[in-house]
Image 1 (cartoon, rainbow over the protein chains, first blue to last red):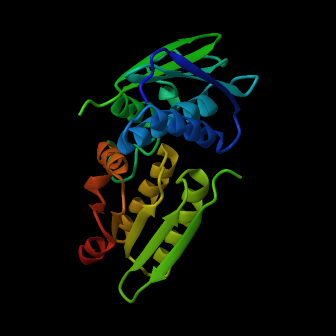
Image 2 (tube, each protein chain N blue to C red):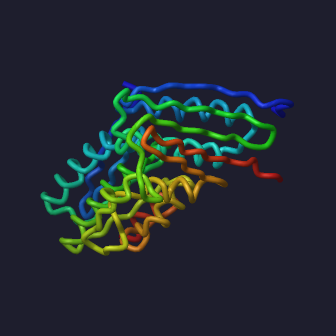
Length: 145
Length: 114
């Protein structure tokens, strides 16, 4: 489906286990509607899952909610994931707590991969964070044949 | 519950194959870890994890897979994966899992390379 105008879908999820999966299912439906291919849909789902988990684990948000905007444009899907938590100071949410080296190899960290996975899978990643919360915006562009 | 999952074990003479079904998050990961550690305790040191019916794997699930790799490494064992999607394989390679565990396109190849 080709979109003539920008369309938005708004979703609020509580920070309950598996709620990131609900968001991923909606992302899948919208990406399919926009004619993203199967591989790209999986990449969008995984990036959204990791972004939501980051908010769940690190935001310390009092309202325990994550707000997600799905912005559908002609050739790209943008996701904005916002929490009203404490924000973070480094370049990476949870960077101070999450990197846990593995026994085999200090390079093979067990945790703290979330944002790196998101950066690998999406075309653009932007993070705005402050004392009133964090918004992670990611963009996936449709592959041209 | 959004995520219904299942784990099946096929215990052969020299190796075991673990089939997972569902979203590989902390819940499925911990269940998988318990099954894998049970096999390792019984002396199984050659394992295949078939992820064909696992469409999504999050980073917590992958961290639990790394713990299974570590447990097998302590016993000089081998873990091979099969049934990964292209995105899953890309993520595994980015996280250096391919350095310590095999990644194969199908179960037969994963078993043959144990």
